[in-house]
Image 1: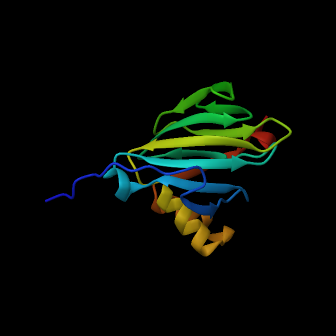
Image 2: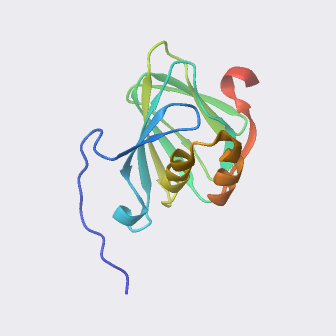
Length: 153
């Protein structure tokens, strides 16, 4: 019998703080156990002009809510833009990436459904080994398929 999901609250910065492959910081605000597998929520601080390489998720849809700053997103063939208070969406299977186009650190609230993507960040942070990045990502259904935005356009 499955354990019931309990209501919870997390304050800003209250989750596990993890280093990302881009050298930024991700705070796990909600994980698989807390949500019964429904979603993962990360608060990501992104340095100016930085963003991940083009990749796709086999399992998760991804929603990016811009908490602070100005970002551009590539999802499939589309280039999207959102600033503080805006959002963008990337469906599973569609190659995507994003970039903080501002001159200050930006923040994204990232919601993935279903849950599980936080495991990729936890495993990467635990090993901190860039040479294992591709294998770690593949273990979580994430495949890198191109360069980050700053070098792709």
